[in-house]
Length: 399
Ligand code: 3PG
Ligand code: MG
Image (cartoon, rainbow, N blue to C red):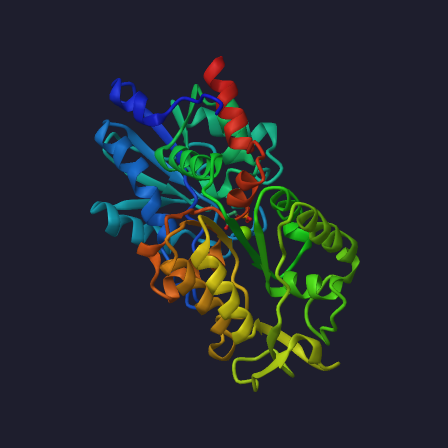
């Protein structure tokens, strides 16, 4: 793997003492309508870098994006305020939240942590404008990239600042995620089974294509499975699917077949007439789906068959629930898959926001081999792509 400077090494060498350290974390956590944090894995995972900086005697600035706000237009729901509260609890010390921080009109002393308000509110963040990057770099002595979940984005605080800061290095979470995923997949124990589910084939097409050449079984779920059912000649009624991508789905099935591998197509499904928690759920054979049916989960026969395969797997990669698990009537498939992963002696690795929520819902955290904080970033690493974060940090390590 490409070499980068590790923040832990700088700290061990005493190079962070008294320095202004700017940490880009991924604190983009799910919230309910009242703004309460519903799942705080990413905040907890970001604590070690902050601790490291504090213990090394640095003045610590932390920032993150939250959602996808409009730049230059502050709305209360885009604020990192709830995150500041949770972070202060976890650190056991106050965390001041600073707004309008780009020009550096704030102070921070060694031993102190400030949270810089949602970085995607800054004009130029998304497109990584050179003017913004210059200002960001001037705020610190050391830039620490610890936002694995955002490592596939080249934005102001994930890329631009890494070019302009005096020193740019990898935080412990960023480094550990990369090491863990790369290691798990370098020589995976076979059979290697991947579960790729979610609403759209289009957003996961490249991962499906890349996995088709690597895995022994590719289990598809959600809207992706519907598109694959269409490709297999089945009717899917009104279900979410992308008919434009039938050709691609067929190509994935063919590529797998040619290697003696398999994309299991559901034998039965759970359907409803409308998308709602209280909609009546009916189990049907995959060949019996009616014109006005919506497929909202895999059926029990399919779930049992997949569960049996997962229990035989040497390695399991999981991204995405196979049904609408937020609704009790349509959670059976995802629950069965989650339980099978937990029970499987194979090494499992999971990532993605909905996947983390399912893992938490079924309480299988301890039974999953490795849980990544990344969604899109996790998938891009699985595809074998070099993420922008690693490209720029490697370049800075050589300078
Ligand atoms: C995520 O939730 O996947 C990361 O925080 C990245 O967010 P983004 O997709 O809005 O860049
Ligand atoms: Mg996302």
